Structure formats: structure tokens, C-alpha cells
Image (cartoon, rainbow, N blue to C red; front, side, top):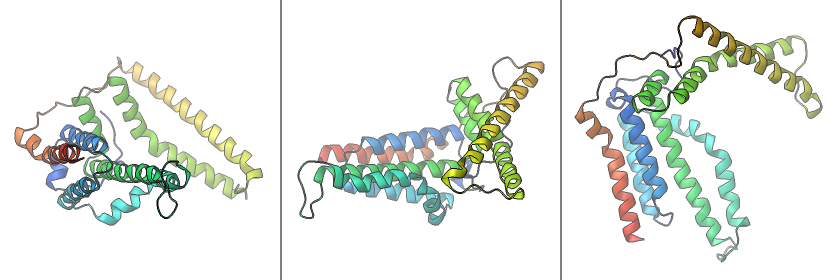
Length: 251
């Protein structure tokens, strides 16, 4: 499987988390997120314990909190929605005039969304793009999905470079669209970039067929992870599942 470019979220390292098999880490991250989502929103203490579990993983993998915080801004639109819910939601009101159901709904979005984003960032930071694809393949993910992800990862740098080159070409011609009435040039650039990407994809596909492509990509020999690696990686999601069950029992 060819994915020669490292994705921008990967932080190379030699920690124990980095050395774990990618399929184990994918299963662990998914199990952790499921436990978080299944937790009742009223169990505030449970989300604090989840945060401590993620902090332990980040410390073990030597991922700085500042790095996680800067990449976590991707959930900003959901945070804005969560902030608006106490004002827009109906139901009983608090002393400050805020909707009580809206406050719980906003808290639910922020708490679970933040934990899910951090868990995903830790997975991406400790696993290279190629290993993520290998992990998905070992977990019997449908081949078309793995292939689409492979090509997306492989050519995203090429497309980004084309976009930068087109912007430099516009600037060199003293045209830098910044206002609404100048959006036509930007839209034209996007359309041109789409056509270039489509044509490149078609050429790559034809080249693959000429080299014997039959619908599946070659992969290396899959080594079975050791049982102790499974036990190590599943410690965190097992603890999260225990917290989720305890939250429901005390709800």
C-alpha cells in the first residue's frame, strides 16, 4: 500500500503508544468513544475521569497539551452551537433566564465532542497515515473505503500544492480576490483545480490498469499483535466502559 506522505497530524516517536499495532489503536479509540457517547450527560464526574484517561495516554505518548489544544479548534462550530442552545432551547429556565434543557444539551455536545476529538487526535498523532490504512485493512474494512482513503492521503499534498501554485499565479497578476464581488476568480480557480484533480485521477487509474490492477491494492504481511499488546491498549477503553456502566447505575 503506497501512502508515502505523512499526514500533518502525525508526531513520530518511539513511545509504547507509538509502537502499538495500528489495528489495536483503532479498536481502542473506537471503544473509548462509544463508552463516552453512551454515558448519560448528567454524570459530570464521569467525563472528568475520561479526561484523566486521555491525559494519561497523552503523557505516555509525549503529546503536548498545547499541541492538542491547537488542533482541537476543529470543533469550534459545535462549541458555538452549544453556547447558543441555552438561549434558544425551551423548557424550564434557570435563575439567569437560561434554558435548563439547553444547558444540558450544550454541555453534552461540548463534553462528548471534545473527548472524541482528543481521542482522535491522539490516534492520529501516534499512528502514521500508512499504518492507519494497514490497520483498517487488517480489521477487514471494505476494500473500496481503504482504497479511497489511500488515494486521498497520497494526493492531498499534490492538490494542496496545486492550490498554492494557482494562488501565486493570481497574485503575480495583481489579482487577490478578497471581496464578494471578486468571488468569480476564486470560484474559477476551484473549478479548474477540480478538473485537474479529476484528470489526474483518471490517468492514475489507467496507469494502474496497465500494470495489472485488479481491484485491490497489495499489502504487506500482516503480523498478529501479541496478546499483551491487546491487553495494554484495551486498558483505557475497558476503564472507560467501567466508568460508563457506573454512571448509568448511579444515574
